[in-house]
Structure formats: C-alpha cells, structure tokens
Image (cartoon, rainbow, N blue to C red):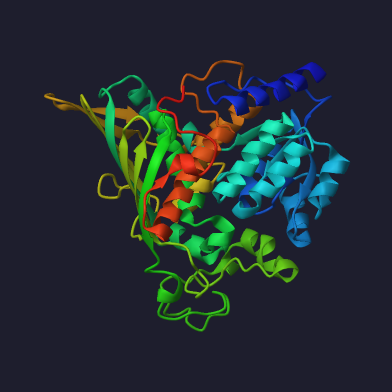
Length: 464
C-alpha cells in the first residue's frame, strides 16, 4: 500500500511540471490512505473538495486537518464533510501536526498565495482552486516557491474536463478548420448567478482581483488549452455601471433590508439551510455577510468587461463577460483558414430547457446531477461546403460533468495518457490568471499590456 501511495505522490510531480503528462492511477487500499489537509471551508471547500471526496474516495484518502479563520464555519464544515479530523484556525499549526501528503487551498482568492507558498516551502505538494492568485507579484512568488521547494502545485481547472469542452479541443487538435486565426468568445452571467458575486467578497478587487480574475480565469484557461498557445498582449475595457453605487437604493443585507419588497435582486438566504448554517450562523466570528447588498458603495469591481487578446501564435481573441444578462450561457466561434466552428451552451433562443434561470447555477454546481441529458451541438462549417452538426452528450451537474472527471483522474483513473492533456499545473494557473490581471491593468492604464512584462514566464507560440 505504501508503494501505491508513493506512486500517487510521484504522479503529482509529473502533473505539476507538465500538463501534458497524465495523472497516474492511485489504488491505495485501506491501510495507507492519502492524507489531505484543507484550508478554506466555504462552499467550494466543503462540497467539491470536501464532502465529495469523502463520499466518493474514502477508501483511498482521508482528511487529517481542516483550517479556517472562522471557528464556527470549521465546526459546520467538519460535520458537513463527514470527517472526524482535527480542526485548526492556525495554518502553520495544522501543517506541523498533521504532516499531510496533499494540501488543498480553497480560501479567498487574494490569500491563495500565502497558503500555497507556505505549503510548498514546508515540503508539501499543493492543490489550489482557481484562480491561482490575483496579481502578478503573487504569481511570481508562487512560481519561485515551487521552483525552490522541489514540491509541486496543481490547479483545479474543471471546465477542461467536461465532454463538451473536450469535443471542441478534439476538433481543433485535428485541424478540422485548418489554422485558427481568430476567436469570438462571449460569456453571459444571469441576474441570479452574476448578481451573487456582487453580494460576496468577490465584489472587492482586493479580495478576488475582480471577475477578470475570479471568473474569467476559467474562460482564459479554456482558450489557452484549446489553442495550445500562450497569450502575448491584452487590451481591455471595463466599468461598473449596474451594481454597486449605481443601484437605486441599498441596505445592510437582504435579510434586514427595508427595500426587499421592491428590489428585483432580493435574495432570501433564510430559505437555504446550508447557507444559514455555514455563513449566517457564524457572522459573529468574522463579520462576513453572505447576503450583502449588491448595491453597497464599497463595490469596486467591473460589471461590464471586454478584452482583445493577442496570442503568441498570432491568433486574436475578442472576449466579453456580461454580469447581468437575462440568461446564463456562452457562445464561441473559431475562425480558421479552412472554415469556422461555432459552439454554445444554454442560449435560450437556440434550445428550450426545463431548467429556469433561477435554478441554472445551482444545477451546474450540484455534485449528484451527473446524468446525461440530450446531446448539445457544435457546428462545423468548412469553406465552400454546407455546415455539419456534431452532437455531444451533455451533463449539467458538476460543471458540465467536468468535476467528477477531474476528481477521477486525480484520485482513481488507471495510468493512461490523456490525449487531450487536461491536467493543469502552475504554469497553466499563471497563464490564465495573468490574462485577467493584464486586462485589469490595461483598464487602469488605458494601454495594452505585454504578458511577458508581468512574470518571468515568457509566452510560447506552441506550448506542447
């Protein structure tokens, strides 16, 4: 069993160093399990990187420590995840006492670097939620720490693992439309999901780096992976025109707001028991309000964003993120020397769905809604020919089926090369976050930002 455990740790090294390497199979058995310590017990930490690991992989792994600055959330997290491990409010104390095989970081984005660097420097491998970090200085510090420590860092990019995203990768890798020349990519957050970011800590740049980093890092990672190339230059526009101080009124939080009867964005947290138990019941420990007013004046992130990205392989990308769309979904079009590929999900005018806009994000986040739905379509249109429709099985739950596939590959899939190279290491984390960081800096300066000026990682035209 100890040999199997060593194989797992060796495979982390391969994964982190080069995303082209697959993650090996980790068949531990029950006498020697992978020891995991988790820091950050919010929604993502307690569910995807917590309860789901216990529910699906308890035969091969165990939690040996949970850490959070909020002792009330810690106690709830321990029960919700289903573990009997020790809890800590001091990260250093957790590392010293538990000596884990793997640290999982799911804290506020702006603090990721603290725990990643401490973990690496203490001699442990680390897995972090996206985004890797929120500015170029922290990104460089993480790069340096990984190099100097000899340990390894994994970034949990689950969108790569959905069957729909994978089919796009396959079509592009097969040169279906020749050499890619340009891309139009539009992502729409609806007035339920998009608004939620402005209620939370994500509404402050110093916490989440803006949605350019927290949300768009998913989209930029997909672009980098689909193109197998690095971004070279970014020019962006952005403004705050809908949320924040633009609102017609504001209150302390939704629960106590006198405007709840005439506010279209009123959200009743009291109807969500988990949110009440995890957050509302523990506000007294750290003053974090989960149902904050999305019209509060301290909000300083953008709600309207548009960027042009030039890649090292000369592909140009026009990207936009809308945070108050009437519907949730996305569209992308790849223009190539031999044709065009168009893909989209959840555009209501293209295909009627039984899922309401209010339910859309909740269904996507569910870890128990993995059933296959009707096939979704990708349009391939070759020059001088009629278009073809490619059908792709689609799963709504777990981020389009990506969550479970990412977990399986990390913790249990047999040792085989992944032809789509979906594993993501520190370089992937840097090159996705850095596009958002560059976009933010471009807005602030009014000038294009060279990616090579931000860290010592130089953009490559062909990453493979």
